[in-house]
Amino acid sequence: MHSRPIKLVLAGLALFAPAAIAFAAPTVSFEYTYVGSLDYYAIDFFYSASPGAEFTNFRLNVVSTNGAKILDPITFQTWDAHGDVVDTFMNSVYSLFDLGPPNVGFNSYKPIGIPPNDTPPVSRIDWSVIDSGSNTGDSNSFDAGPPYGVVSAPWHLARVLVKWDFLGVMEFRALDTQSGGVPTTFYFIPYLTRPPAASRTTVTALPGDILGHTFVAVDLDEPGLTGFDWSDFTFAGPGIAVQPTFDYQTQQFNWDSTGSAPGLYKAAVNVGVTSTATLTIHLIPEPSCLALAGLALAALVAGSRRRRSAPPIN
Image 1 (cartoon, helix red, strand yellow):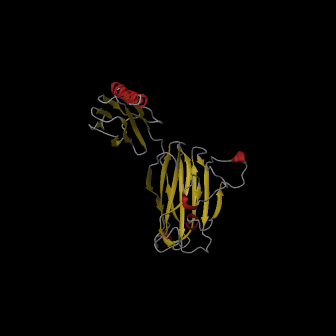
Image 2: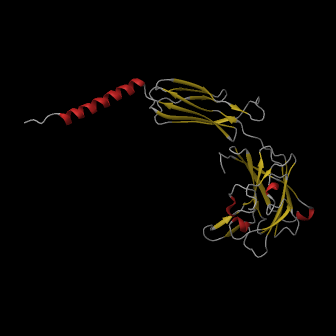
Image 3: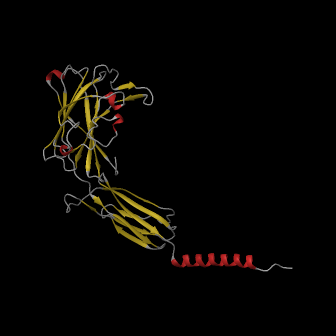
């Protein structure tokens, strides 16, 4: 993934059929990550089977209610070993660890063999991932051997890429060897919005300058919105003589650079959970210091030349 993704984790709402109450059910959660460089969200689903059970199958049905908002950049790839590719994919436990492809049923939107002019985005993706039956050991923990060793759930079984303004519902229906053929259904309604655009400022100053700066952030969807959550102010540089001050209420930064070494300094503060405002300060030496250094260097060079050109003493 690109940018600086911060992940938000929410649990889904599980609706149980009466027959399913007698047994422990699978659990599913999802998290979504905003990728600012491309202005989309990656929505990831994580699965754990019932205690003592093994994975059998699941069905993921994602429906956009405001148009074609679902992205699938690599249309020929429907699953991904390790679950880290930037794409829409769905895995079984075994395919997640590259132990064999999953059995995928395309209930809606089949990405293989479609003409180029029919490529995504699409408004719905509905896939079923089924265990072949020959794969055993895909419970909540198993030893897949090198390089995995003993690994454990939750398994990253699916990722769906959507545009930042996606509105809709995601349905995950999960079964395992203890489900008795009755799925546990989870509904997820993600609330997606673009993070605020935070200021990124660069200035040049001299040692001894007193610097003032106000960090700002703008909501890209509602420019007049204020009241962001500012947190975790940091300041770093090669030789800080006096620490700066920062007011979380006004976002005002002040720094007396007297005594600090020349070099590159950076102040940063988080805005919400996905953005960071920065101030970069290039602290350069005084011009007089540079001139004196230049004169001293010239004098050294001249002295060296005189020594080399002096006549030998008889």
